[in-house]
Image 1 (tube, rainbow, N blue to C red):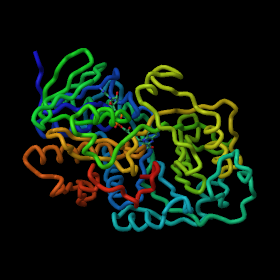
Image 2 (image 1 turned 45 degrees about the vertical axis):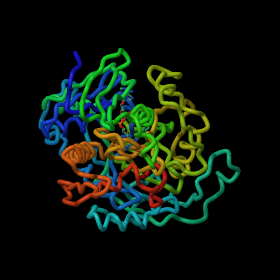
Image 3 (image 1 turned 180 degrees about the vertical axis):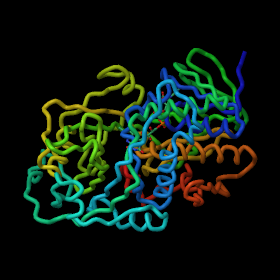
Image 4 (image 1 turned 120 degrees about the vertical axis):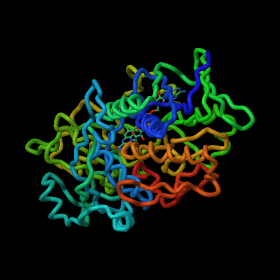
Length: 445
Ligand SMILES: Cc1cc2nc3c(=O)[nH]c(=O)nc-3n(C[C@H](O)[C@H](O)[C@H](O)COP(=O)(O)OP(=O)(O)OC[C@H]3O[C@@H](n4cnc5c(N)ncnc54)[C@H](O)[C@@H]3O)c2cc1C
């Protein structure tokens, strides 16, 4: 018997799960299908789960600020659902954007003002009071340790930073997706695991449903691609969808390192999230009093575009090609060592490797497609974890409006953000847009 649903969502990560949850609240009968064994086990599990408001566009800042409010209101958002695994926890550390040539921080400040993000401008002295282990010399431009100028003595000082008291990280990103799955199930949503979608069936310009690797066919008038780093493969399965996107997506390998906090500095309990374009790194506290160090994709760092099927086949360990590369380990840790001279870089690399589902301009695609009933929440580009609950809402409203007849390409859906009370023109995330050159073309979005 072919089963029927109102909407099938491909993927049960932190993006697919909230789309189901919001559609269920609107009365849709949904099914999430994921080839992994549980919710959030894909790239969501490798996320640094940092929640911060600084983006290079005003809409990006607004979406992140709205997303932040959902994390603060987590139990209410989940409608107080019980999860046998417990609830993910949002840790509000505060977030420091260091003013540097590596960020267009003046634009960020302008966007903070227009969106109403709370922030304070800090001098170097004020930063040193908060983070006494820092050296606030300017090290620009970002270099690799193999560059003969890497260890040059700096001569200039930085010019302070923008500090947001609102910002931090979520302690367990996979668990957060699991929490949302439980909330969706409580509203009637169904989830199917260890089930790989191999075909998207369509007829007369309308999606009909999906076919799984074991031949099972499941029908629905709405199918949503929330396949994370596999998004381009799923778009290529759906007739006309890939060709109809002006902005494409592909999978980028990304390494995140752990370094112990210097002796005497309790980064875990007293630390902040930092974004530091001067040395191309971002940092947040990690359990065990560690610095978690990611790269902000400076030009000198090589980009590794990969086949997600090969990566998740697990060349280096179960479920992942999780081998840190020595050169990148050194680059990220030595750069942090310049900013924090008392940092002791351990000999053994430790960290996480996972994939970004990267769009051409590092801004996501939240849109319909050229195939009737087929939608995309893709291209999250290493920077949309924080936005996932609000993305669930905006996608559900978009789907509902288009299914009821809205011509979203001609007249883009205007989404109202419930916490910050702003309108967001969803045309901003269109697959048909030209590349947005206001973007940082990095994880900063
Ligand atoms: C290392 C790293 C650090 C990051 N740090 C941050 C951060 O600090 N802050 C932030 O905001 N964002 C961050 N991000 C980005 C954020 O984590 C992602 O945007 C988000 O997790 C993507 O969620 P997703 O649901 O789209 O993808 P996924 O979690 O990958 O889910 C997609 C799911 O689709 C399934 N799937 C794929 N193909 C098929 C198929 N054919 N059939 C069935 N199922 C399929 C997969 O199994 C997977 O479970 C980071 C990302 C990475 C990789």
